[in-house]
Length: 238
Image (cartoon, rainbow, N blue to C red; front, side, top):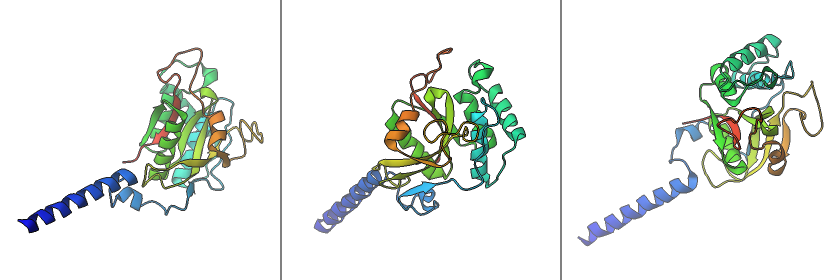
């Protein structure tokens, strides 16, 4: 019986160790999703030359974002006006609210467009804080190797989050802090600035700098379901 007791204590200790490891790492040991990703070297950036496109009209920021994200996803270099118009018309038809034509597409329409034209894993995520929005965005980006859409200017404009750096790999642990991000704004080329809307594509921002742009949603003409939330459109991995 003493031998059996010893084996039982050892088994319990192993179970506790596995449980603690799972909580610390944030994924089960041998997670196939994490194992299939590019090696972690402190950060990731999906941006590459040729993927950027300028929005063709002042209203088509989300359409240009879809085009950019398609270029990243499918390794294309499409910059056509016809493509943006197609995405815009589809998203307008899938808006949840009767948004004025001058104000373009709401987050529901944008999500529908990303699901239809980029990847069907995209979902709208309404976060109650900047910190939770940023953490979920980078975790989704890392675990799917796909860019994330974020609403900026309180919903008046839309950017693409293409990369980030962090203190640890979000695909393998919840114990991490985001130290910087990479963003793309489709107004570059139509309205180009060194700081603001929009900066050179693949601009590096600190966490604090991003917070000045990525702010809670507010659309004065209509109170929407995500009012006061940090709205992003993320590829939700398994």
